[in-house]
Image (cartoon, rainbow, N blue to C red):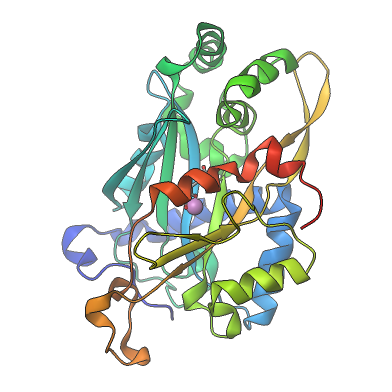
Length: 317
Ligand code: OOG
Ligand code: NI
């Protein structure tokens, strides 16, 4: 087992008899993600076989349009209903985004399993600050969100089915959004699909538990890592280290019949080091809550670039 994420979770929140259903929904979200993203699937298969079929997820991430009820809350409500707790807000003024993260309830079922059947992951949900976009971009986003009627109520359902809650856009509308915000264009064609899963490296068993070694293993296996601001993103305290692949692309048929390749999802790796006050604990006694928690705005800002045109069109490793 990789151990539970939070120390007092059972006092704060609980998932009780809903756990099997909740995990089933996450499983469906993951299967949509694995079917669409060959790199993520290949890397998970590689790490699974290197690790004797056991790995844990640090977090899952989603993107949303922050307008008319389609923002963070539309996806967060599902996680809050199943015992998650809202934590800190992160702001990205240059990208016109904000995000919230959520910590999991205490889990019981199969939390010694792997991936979705392991300890429940943190959840990271961001939203585009739509009212800060140009009038043309706002108009397109509102056209699709408004015409979907109550699609925002079914964010988790849409994500687990792999279906947009709105109609497919015109290619020119995708391009308009892409010219202003790659995040906006991504969200228009991917909707509530899982944006990434993150492997918890410190909970691996082999040498891959060191994120630098895992990064090398990924590169040696022929995959590209997001190089924005350097491959390894390190928090100012040094205790949260992250890296991610460059997103896969998928062929998307727009409503005007144009078929173009669009960015899809990526996979991330995170190593959380032991907090200074617990540095003398023997390794065998270190639990997840003894480690650096949360996220880091400067690192996240660069991880968002995993789906950017600049990263996708990079040549070489
Ligand atoms: C999220 C980027 C940030 C992290 O762990 O800080 C992130 C996104 O690309 O939607 O994943
Ligand atoms: Ni992430």
